[in-house]
Structures are given as structure tokens and as C-alpha cells.
Length: 377
Ligand code: ACO
Image (tube, rainbow, N blue to C red; front, side):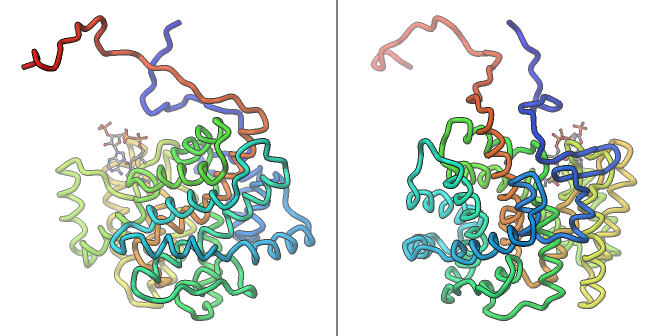
């Protein structure tokens, strides 16, 4: 039977899912039926993770139990710290995160017949450990000691603590928490699909997350947040935006943080991050927000009609850099959030699993004659 080939699987459903929903025309995103803007205003990353994983908002005691469990899971095995120390300091933190996430699974070898408790523990453990790995790699590669997690701090607060050894500014902690909520899931994107494919083979959740991390690391996916801030820094001041963006358009170079397979209007997450970018740069005096506004105006004027608008990555980089986070940690922060969504999809995949095995349209040759090596020219 011949099927139509759809490049990039655009518009092709690969699963039934109740985890999240996007309306790309209206610019609307929901997790388990809750508007992401409502969650950003009222929830926490911890609560949102439980919502994604279990399909309902937790009770007070469920949330507190989760937070207590996370305290124990945040710590790293000393051999994982040793492994991180062995990685090249010039390597990208996304690669370090992928390696350490995969290696962590070797300490919990429950490859087959995982029961509900084992699965739940694996999910919580992965969500808890990712920030610790990111912060450990960032410090160790600069020659600083690893800082153990602080049991009294939130998930977002702990990340600042483990990066700097300082108690986080509550306003900054809140902004990072909101950013984590906004990035926690996004329907069937490349990394989620990668995770579901690996999950469908009944590989363990550490492999699922490490494959999703590999997919997220690319500049067409999570890596665009770094590229966007690098562009704003290169532009340097708002007056330069017209020339730089004009040249990029002339060279048919993609604007980082612009365009989306689903959104044909501004991404709702970008709108929220834009407010924080403005607030933070006003306080610091950084020109990046004003530069971004110019790039946004020029980008929309040129590409808006084609449905290419700012996506979540456009303002995320400004927010993170204002929070004092190193540029190479931007995509790892995305991963620290998205791990909850990846795992919610993994659990859902296993409920009604069938291994992914798509097909291809063969364009190669047939019936080739084998020429011995000695006779080949
Ligand atoms: N700047 C300029 N032109 C663009 C952009 C952009 N950012 N994005 C898409 N286009 C153009 C393409 O050049 C193409 O033009 P053409 O039809 O004249 O050839 C057309 O729009 C369609 O682009 P595709 O890349 O085919 O669209 P697709 O849906 O496959 O890709 C993607 C979506 C990858 C997000 C794309 O818009 C892009 O590369 N954006 C820049 C990178 C980026 O911001 N990624 C983050 C996405 S959000 C996320 O993953 C969290």
C-alpha cells in the first residue's frame, strides 16, 4: 500500500494524547485542559509537573509528599559527579546532561516489567536530578566545586543555589519558576516524539530522556534561545537592528526565535516572557529588550504574513541572561522543564504501546552486481 510522504510529518498524528493541546491560530496552549497562562500565574513548576504526569492537580498533601521525595532525589551519585568531571570543559552542557542522564539509568537497572511505583520514582528522580547535573557541570568545568542541593529551596530556587552557592532573589526564583512552567510541555514536538519512539521499544526512562535531550539540543528546536540572545548581542544597539536583520533576510537566513510549525501568530509563552524581559532589562539597563523589539518589528513586517512570528525562544534568552544564567545553560533550562512533559508522554505511550516502525519510500538501487575489491576502480 502506498502512502503519501509528508516531510517533517507535518500534520500527521502519531499518537492519541491527553497531555497538552495547542491552537496555533489562536496562540493558545493548555496542559491537561488548563490554560498555560493561568498556570504561569497561579501554579508552581512542582505542581505543574504533577499535573502533567498524573493528569490532575495534586492535593496539598500530594504536593508536599512530592516535594519531600524530590529532596532526596536531587542529590547525585558521587560516580555521576566523577563522570561529569571527566567531560571536556569546552563541551556543551546539553551533551553533558544527555551523557549523565543516560548514565544515571545504570544505577537503576529496571529495564523490564516496571511497575507503577518504579515508573513514578524514575519520573520524579529524573525531574529532580536534571538541574543538579546542569549546575554541577557548569561549576566543575570552571574549576569550582559542585554544590549540593538545598533541601529548603524550591526546584527553581535550588538551581540558582547550586549554580552560585547564594540564596536566590525571590523575584528571580519566581521568574525562573514561571519559565519552567511555560516550557514543561508542548504536544508532539521533535524531542517529545524522539522520547516516545524510544519509549515504544520499552527502553528505560533514562534512555527516553537522553534521546529527547539529544533532539532538543539542535538549533531548530531548543537551541534557538541561545542563538536569539547571541543575535541581540551582535546587534549591540537598537539602531543597528535594521541593517543586521536586513542582511539576514537578504541572505535568506532564518531569524532565531521566529517561526513555528504550529503557531501562526505569536507564541503565548513568548508574550509572558516578553513582559519579564522588559521588567528585568528596565532594572538592569541592558539594551537587549529594545533590540529584541526592533528585531521583532522587522521580523513581523517581513515574515508575519507568512505565519512566522516570535516563538518561546525569542525572549527566553534575555530573561535567562538577566537572571545571571550562563548562555550555554539556556537550552539545559528548557530541558529541566520539558523533562516533565517527556515523562508524561512516556507514561501515556506505555498505557497503549505499540513499537514505532514507520516506513519509507525507497529511492535507492536494486540488483547491484558485487565487484571484488581488487577489481574496483
Ligand atoms: N526566519 C525566516 N524564515 C523562516 C523562519 C525564520 N525563523 N522560520 C521559517 N522560515 C521560512 C523558511 O525559510 C521557509 O521559507 P520558504 O517556504 O520560502 O522556503 C518557510 O518559512 C517554512 O519554514 P520551515 O523551516 O520549512 O518550517 P518548519 O515548520 O519546518 O520549521 C522551525 C519550524 C524549525 C521552528 C522554523 O521556523 C525555524 O527554523 N525557526 C528558527 C529556529 C527556532 O526559532 N526554533 C525554535 C522553535 S520553538 C521550539 O522548538 C521551542
